[in-house]
Length: 234
Image (cartoon, rainbow, N blue to C red; front, side, top):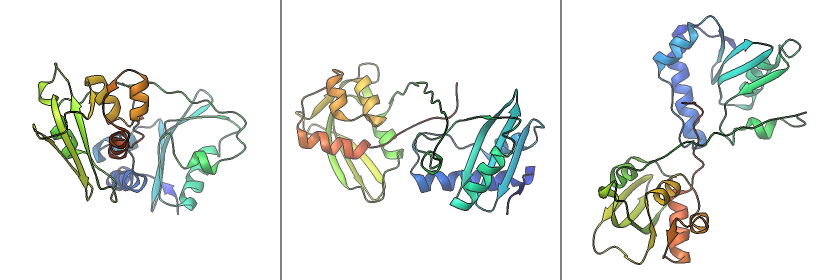
């Protein structure tokens, strides 16, 4: 059952958002806190509805609907929430939204008359490889070890020959002389691109990676496979 949301639903909305990110393996987006959601629910210009396993927050202005957040744990909830968004199509035929590039709605909705997708690139920088790698999440069934050499004059803590190991959702990065010094070599830009899921083959074509081997490339691709995104605009 879908009902209008109220400020007391803020904790539920935060929890549902976190569950959705785990379920879809989302990489990158920031989860609004319960306090942030509460602030949204107290704003008169925003319209919010909540279900047992989902919610939507949107705004209607200038003949268009702008969806700020939509989370659904089932196909039924997704249909009901998107149905609410589209219920005012006679007055607001245009819908703007900020989504995961692989949001399920792009598979579920067919025959769209027209759509426009805009992407704004954002900057990423790995400032402490060991700490960042240890805090990063990995797929439950990923078990891989890869070698990487990093040259980073602006963040010397990143420089050196590294052994990257992933098992049981956790990663460890060890820098020592015993690591493979003939492994793939990258600088700060190459490291950031690798971190964000760019394949080694594309790093090579961009001149951001050298050395290594096909097996090493495949191992690094398995370690960093992801499609990160941010729906906020800074």
